[in-house]
Length: 231
Ligand code: DER
Image (cartoon, rainbow, N blue to C red; front, top):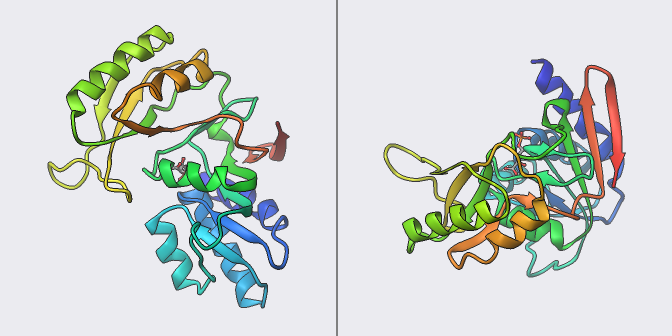
């Protein structure tokens, strides 16, 4: 599909950033998938890299490609993480977590010297919020946590439905870390930093999908070609 072509076009320039001996964070999702495929090809052609996956899905993909894997415990500081996003604004503030991997993605991105986001043009938006904001929460006290998220988000100027992400059958979605995800349909997030601060005050919130000050570069592919946006 067109969108898939754009994802491949966005992933390609990111692969040029990969140098021999690099320690890489491998992102999660359908765009990062193409980056992982390209790393697999570099490895097949003899490139030496050591990679930390941001999800079990990416781990098994990388294992199939025989990409050398490590853990953040063995390799606590990475050179570069390449990952997708659900939404990107012009200051490279992101909404992530559509694939349910936001906690490990944020830990890996934070442990990296650089983070490069790859996306098709549909992810760009003026003001964050058209994509629901995923928030990882613990199961205990879920209803109280959801109420507090809504109350504190409202104080931060964000209103909307907070919905438990469904999984298989009538089970909720369970993250790699064994937690749950609520998707917050806030429609617009006028001050992402204010909302991020508010969400971290909720004791049942593990982490949220606002990635602020983490992405250094975004490679965005669309009908007008590929553009590189720097923070
Ligand atoms: O879950 C995530 O954070 C993914 O990176 C997601 O935000 C992007 O997935 P996509 O490339 O399949 O749209």
